[in-house]
Image (cartoon, rainbow, N blue to C red; front, side):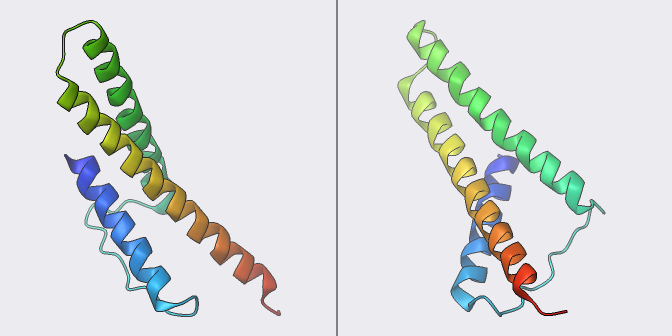
Length: 105
């Protein structure tokens, strides 16, 4: 469930940044755990991968008659949301990088 909360928070943050325009400054994110950006990115990638693995294992379990179809749909939806969030963040990072590269020194 922590992955869902993280994905939802990241998705909401990306949506808010995009709605305010390219030149708007985002509010600083509180980081109570003291994680740096690299470890945050790594843990996010791990959680997206884990969501995909859960969806795969649920699909295999339902094929074997050991799980409920609702569990599979839920796992696939969570995996899709996590992946869409990751893609949205990637797109914003690329956009920010391109904007920085266009700046005059």
